[in-house]
Length: 106
Image (tube, rainbow, N blue to C red; front, side, top):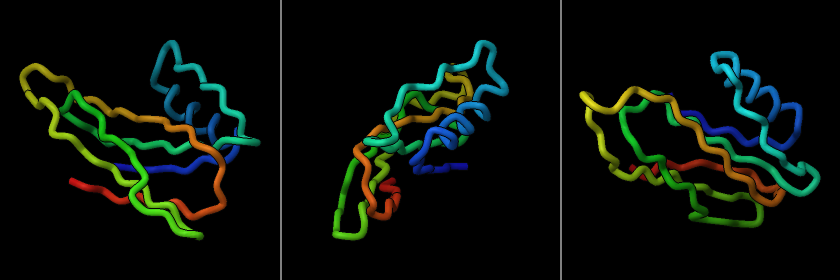
C-alpha cells in the first residue's frame, strides 16, 4: 500500500530506517538531515512492477496548508522482466508549520 510520511525529528527518521534495514544486509545509511532547519517527506510506493518513481511537487499553498501532489508517470511495466519492488523516496525541504496534505494525480 502507498504511504506518505512527514518526519520532523531525528528519532522518527532513524526509526523509519531501522524498519527498512531489518531486511537489508548491509543496511542503507541514514542520510544527514539538520532537523533544526529541515524536515523530510517520505513516499513509500507500495509493491510495484514499474521502473519509474512518481514526482512530488507543491500544487497549492495557503497560510495553513501545503498540498503536495504525487504525479505517477506511466513507467515501463513488464511482468516478465521487471522484478516486484517496494521503492521509497525521501525529500528534504525547509521546516514549515503548515499542515502537509498529499494528493495523488493518477
